[in-house]
Amino acid sequence: MTTPRTSEHPILPMFIERWSPRAFSDKAVTDSDILTLLEAARWAPSASNLQPWRFIYGIKGTAEFDQMVELLVPFNQGWAKSAAALVFTAAVTTFDGERPVATHAFDAGAAWMSLAFQAHSMGLITHGMGGVEFDKATTALNLPDNLKLIMGVAVGYQGDPSTLPEGLQAREAPSGRQPLEAMTFKGKFSGEIKAP
Ligand SMILES: Cc1cc2nc3c(=O)[nH]c(=O)nc-3n(C[C@H](O)[C@H](O)[C@H](O)COP(=O)(O)O)c2cc1C
Image (cartoon, rainbow, N blue to C red; front, side):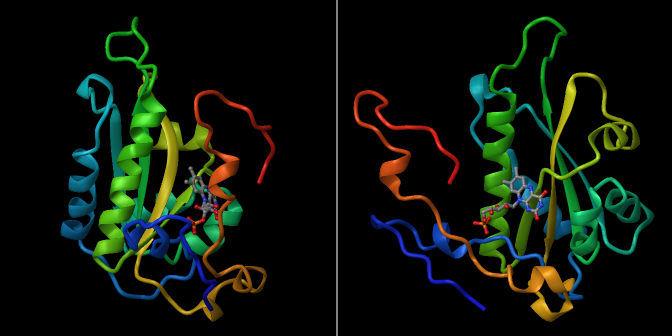
């Protein structure tokens, strides 16, 4: 089940080949696999090279993983419990309690994207999840006040869509994007902001 994706300008194929399936196979990932993804994330650029991202992961088949599944909203639990690993991404909001790291979420986003493309290059799939029980997860993951939980990421190998809850099977296809002209302006902004 695929939807063709095309680029308006020539780009590396990986940018349109990567997408976020929800069906995972039973194939396991190792700690080494996850550390390879996080190694890629480590090399993301960040403001003043502060690297304000922190990752907490769990591999399927462990008590840590089971606890992490419980930290997702029920919709995400329904499919992400079948992932081979979960990675929670948090961002450091301040290092000294005074000066905020203004770009913490942006920088953590760059790290997540590096993780996702490294995974793609290894034949793994990733699916980001903002649907997290944030208060519960912040406590369970032992996050201090200056470490803001941003998202969870389900990682694994792509599986058969028929394993998904029924309502999700038809949605198991790569999505499109708005045209480039809806998000690109030369000199100054002259568009309108509307949801895609
Ligand atoms: C920060 C972030 C949060 C997301 N939250 C969820 C989520 O809670 N549940 C879900 O099923 N998908 C979630 N997604 C997946 C997006 O819906 C998906 O990336 C988007 O539709 C684009 O599709 P693609 O990744 O296949 O290109 C999230 C993605 C990102 C980057």
